[in-house]
Image 1 (cartoon, one colour):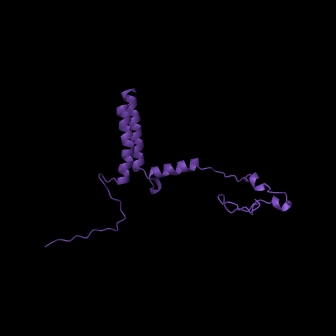
Image 2 (cartoon, rainbow, N blue to C red):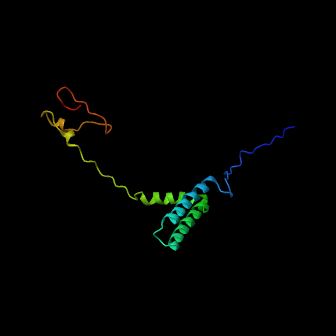
Image 3 (cartoon, helix red, strand yellow):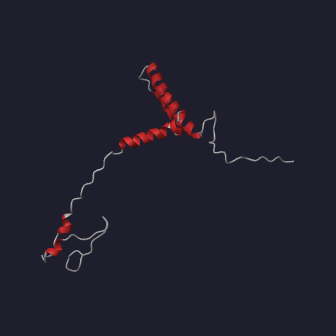
Length: 136
């Protein structure tokens, strides 16, 4: 007789790959561990102690980014939010756009009514000319 097992699918729990680490945590740790090893292995011009300290520092930062989650958000999200805050301007200034001299051009001197600029609803909208070359 075959045994049937019910698989729960509404647990709201992240999957774990190994050592109770989620795929995001594994990827974050590897993103720091790989350059740390590369720096330790390839930076042969520096003494062994300097390479070890730099690699250990990068690895420590990687461990912090992997496991520390203030406010139930990973540190990389906090770092991105901080970066976005730092590069976003705090003040915005409005200034009037300079008028285009071509809009004030007269086809033929016919009076003051021709001095009004043509009406446009968008930047890419073309202004139609009548048969004499006046803007409509």
